[in-house]
Length: 176
Image (cartoon, rainbow, N blue to C red):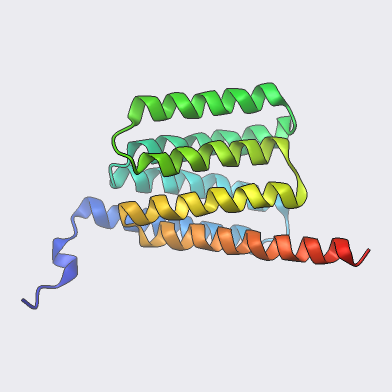
């Protein structure tokens, strides 16, 4: 009756939680940086941690899409606005989902991957941040469904940061 909850957690589950917390720390460090290159660098590693977290939780679609986000971050820095590159990333995301799909919960990771890809490649400013906020919300749900504390907190941080930035950009545009 007084069983400790951690007794029920496997080593795999603990590793998943650890990777989620590592991703959280990398996201905090990245968003705290004033340098965009440092932000992108840390987000690359955060997404590696997210992918490993989802592997530990056996959420294969989310793991594959998180791994593709590493490539997406790199490509969007070089090919922003290029429809062909964006469509190739969306196709890769769809193929990854088709090959790994295991449950309805995978739809949240797929939606996050597609929405985030379109937003990052094709939009800028407030519209981009709105789509990234929607993608972050989808990732929050995906993390909740696998039971990741660190991943959920990291994506909530990204969601809130995007919403605050949207408000700041909106107020700055109205002041002009």
